[in-house]
Length: 361
Image 1 (cartoon, helix red, strand yellow):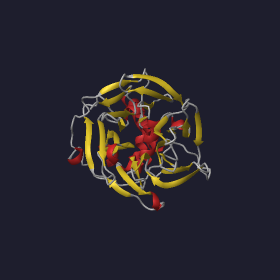
Image 2: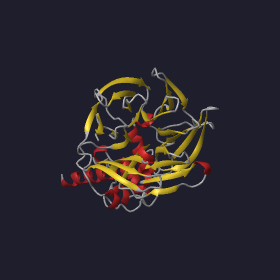
Image 3: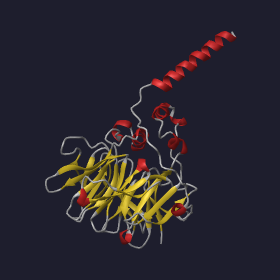
Image 4: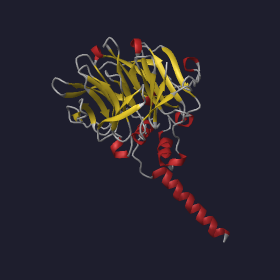
C-alpha cells in the first residue's frame, strides 16, 4: 500500500513538474535588470495625505481609470463597462454622457470642445457633445492594429499623441486590461509604443516604440515635450517633439511602484498615479525569464498581484518631485492618476474602485 501511494505521489510530482515547465503560455519573457527599489524613502517617503478623501458617486459603476475636467465644470470619468460619466463635483450627481462599447481609459478634451478617448478595445475615439462615438484610429497607417490604446494628450495643432500599451497583449483577447497588462509586464519585451494621429490627413504613425508597457501621456505646457510613463520600467520619460526618433530622457527613475496615467496639472506640473507598489519577487525574477514563464502557469490565487497602497505623484517637466499624496492603508487604492480642479481640489482615479476620490481644498 505504501509503495503504491509513493508511486502515485511521484507520478503526481512529475505531472506537476511537466506542467510548470512545459504547459504553453502566451508570454516569451526577456531577461532584464530591474532597478533597485528604494521603497518609500526620500521624495517618496510615506504619508497619509489621501486619508481625508471624499468620494463622488458612480451609480454602481467601477474602475474610474481616468477623468478630465470639462469647460462646463463637470468631471468626465471613464469606467469599466464602457461608459463615460458626467459628474458634478459640487453636488455629487452624475449622468451617462456616452457609451463607447469598449473600455475607455485615457480622456482629454480638444480645443474644439470635443472629447477624445483612448479605448483599450476600440482604439482612438472622438465623442461629440451628444455622446456620439466615432473611431478615429484602430490601426496605424502601415496597417498594424492598435491593440491597447491607453492614454492621450492633444497638441495645439490638433495632433493627438497616445499610447498603445502593448502590441502583443490586448484587453479584448485576454479578457480585461489588468490581465493583459500583467502578461506584458511579465514578458518585458518592449511591446509598447507612442502613436501620433494627424487630424489633417487622418493618418496614425509611430512616434516612439520599444517601451515596456507604454502608459500615461502628457504634453508639456510649452508644447515642446512629451511626458510618458513606462510602467514596466518604473520610470517617467521625456521626449522632445522636434526630435522624433531620438532616445528619450529619463526624468524620474526607480519609482517605488508601477506608474500609470500622467495628466498635466496646475502651473505646468504633472500628476501621475502608481497603481501598486513594486513586488520583490517579480523584481528578483527580472533576469530569470524561465522562472517568469513558470509564474504565469501558477493558479491565479498563487500569482503575485497588486498591493493596495494609494499613491499620487506631482512633478515638474524636468522630473523634480514636488509632492506625493498617499494612502498606505489602501482604503482607496490601485490609483491610476489625478486631475486638478479649478478650485484647487484634486480628483483621484482608480483601476478598480467603485467611487471617484476627491481631495477637497
